[in-house]
Each structure stands twice: as structure tokens, then as C-alpha cells.
Length: 547
Image (cartoon, rainbow, N blue to C red; front, side):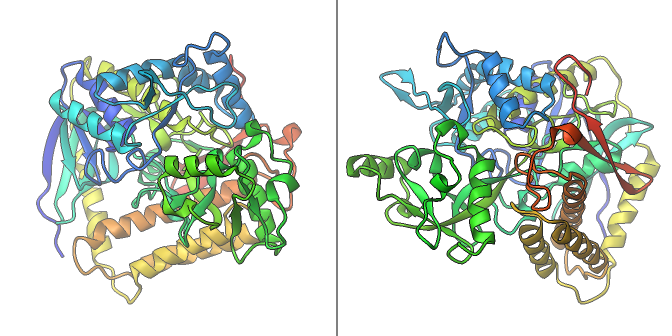
């Protein structure tokens, strides 16, 4: 195979990622009357985690409750995050969330209403009801945003996998990407925004959009940006099916009297003292369920949902609200990977450690600490998407474009050519499934030193095997690159999980089952130094300190 001739595109602001954070950033940047190009692996606004989300959005000012406040939202978020959040980022999100709801309505997003008033939902872990829900769930957010962005002149290029951020010295000046036909694109940009989402697809059971392979984490890492909190992977407590694609609405059924039972018929929620709605956070419920399975009291790898104590009228209403056949009978359930709390290090202006590079959304770390409070993903992505767009556009409006050095481009094209020249008998699909199974079995809800070390060895073995995968056509080149990215992210998760010798939030170590604030009120940073992965533990900064 031969790569096609390099195509060069010039723009002012480059946005990488077509979900909610990327769309919001592009819309904001376009207000400066600059050229804005949005690159996406999938169709913009579709087949990403925002598009398949539940559309629930926490904002303290939207319910007009005089007792609620951004400060309370801040406190709830830090408490759920087990106090290792970046306090400054949490404050920015909590204070900016309400405005984002109004902005979304301006873009054409509609939220559920009752008697012409916004319907307000009370999510677990929130002191007061403060969440609104978009009509049509996630796609009800992203489709209007896509249409609005296009109407304002944002340019889209779809089906593009970015393989490298291009630098001139320590400044990011654009990116290089490929499509499935072997076309290489070089985008020269005055400023670049990463909004590529998370990496749930590295696990066998996950409810993420297909293709959530952690590409943005690797782009940032390989360019010299530190990643933080990569050991904290959130598991949604209950999902249906072998691969956990369909979440079960425990936050609705459990407060009404529903529960989970093990193979002995025991009430798991009662057994672990999780009855208060406030304490039904995802880490607590996931850990309880998987502890029962790990100790042999599961029904295979699952537990069962029990509706018997829900009054019949209420159960009928809940089934209508959920609109899902899985709620009509007892079903087997188990946790599923839902969200990555970790990611690129940013400040309140969405600036990374590299000049010209900004980031927003799930690709960033810091807001959620050790466990994301439910309903906080959307406010994070839209608040910081807006900030990233404004910051990047503000910089772009004051500088001249710098073209990517030819040597940078040439080196990346040669690397891609080398991947296409692999010879051997390994199979990409089989290797990907092997990694996903390893991560689920050994780096899942319940972790041990032995399991994590085995996972590391298996990841290194897969990396060696990847060098022997023959590629039949250009469609397989992006797949090979994405698998390499998955392996890198998997290693980050393993190594950070080994480093943190305590249990905190979504990270549970059987050897160290207690939270240890004396030794581990710290963040772990992962950095690429001379091609090697290094880890550094740094004490958590308080609200007024630098992180």
C-alpha cells in the first residue's frame, strides 16, 4: 500500500472531536469571525458519547431554588470525587453550568417540561434537584448543535483520524490525520482544541460509543502534555447484556423500592447500607455488586434486579417512563464502563502545558476527581467547551499562522508507512478483544496487585504482536493506530492503579480496601519523557492553590 499525496489545509482554529465539547468549542470560536475547522472520526454530532448520553444536565441556578447555589454544586462534586478534584476547575464548572443551559436552548435544544416549566430531576449525590433533561436525550443535544454550527460557518471534515499533533518547538501548530482511503491531511492552525472524548472501548463491557479508544489521551501524552487521574475509571452500576451496552435505570427504580439481589436472594443494597438516595453514587453501588460476584454470590457474572417491593402503579409508571422492554421482568445486571475521570491536565482557561493547545470534555482530567457525580458530564463538556473555544480564538486572533515543520510531517508519514509494511499472521480484531477482556477481568471494578501486574504483561505482549499485523487495505490503518492508542491508555490505567495503594472512589484495591487520606490525598500524573512513561504523585491543591 502507498499513502496518497499529502493534502494541506490552513485554518485559524482547529477542533478535533465532533461531540458536545467539540461542537461547543467550534461555535464559540466562530464568534470571532475566524476560520474554524472541526475534524471528526465519525459524522459530526453522531456516534459519539454525547449523542448516546441520557441528556441529563446539572445546573444549580436552573430550578431557581433559593437554597441551592453554585457553591453547593461545587461541594457535592468535590465530595463525590473523594476530594482529589481540581478545585478551581470544579468551581468554574459549577458557576458556568446554568448559562450553558440557556445557550443550548438558543441553539435549538429543547428540554423536558411540565406545565410549561422545565422539568427538574434530582440525581444521586446532589443536595437538591438541579438537573434538566434534553428531549431526545443525547441526540437532542448534538443534532441541533451540529445544525447551528454549520449555519454559523463552522467547516466539518468527517472520517478523519488524527494521528499526531504537529509542533514547532513547544508550540502546537496543527495536526496530521488520515482517512480510510489513505489520504493524508496536514492542517496548519493558529490554535488547536482537543475534544476527543474518553476510552471506554478498551473494556469488554462498556456503554460508550464504538470508537472511544482514547486517541486524544495519546495525542496529548505523546506531545508532552501530562495526564492525571488515569486510574479512575467510572463504572455505571447496572447494565443489561454480555457487553453492558444498555444501562438499567437504578436511580429511578431503587428509590421506588427496587433493589439488587445475589444468588442467595439477599438484598445487596441493604447488605451494604446503600439506602439513602444521596449515597447511591456509582462507585458505591458498582463496588457492592462486584464484591458479591467476586465472592461467589453472583448469578454467574451478574446479579438480579428485583421490583417486587415497588407498588404496581408506580412500577407501571416507571416502565412507561423508561420505555424499555428490559424493565418488564427481572433481569440479570452487572456494571459497565461508563466514563474516564482522568485525562489531560488543563487550567481554568482550558490551556494545556503546550502553547497553542487547548482541551475540553472527557479528554481532560481534574473536574471529577475519583468519581464523577452523575449529571455532571454535560455541564463539564459545555462549560469548558465554551472556554476552550474562546481561549483558542482569542489566541488565534492575535497571531500569524505557523506552518508545521516539514521534518515533523515527513517523520509522521514515514511512521504511517512503516505500519502499513508489517508482515505476519496476527489478527487486529482478535487482539482488540484480548485487550478488552484483559482490562475487564484484571483492571475492572475490583483490582489486585497480581491482576494489575498480569494485565501489564499482557498489554506489553499485545504491543509486540501489533508489530506483526499485516494490513490488507487502508481501512485497517486507522484500526491499527486506534489499537495502539488503546494499548497505551490501558498501560496508563494499569500503572496508575498499581501506584495508588488505597481505595478511593472508582478505584478499588482488594489489598488496600480503605481510603487513605494521610498518604494518598494526591493526584498521579503520567508523562512521556524521552519515549518512556513516567508517573509522579503530587499532593492535591486546595481551592486557592495551583495544581
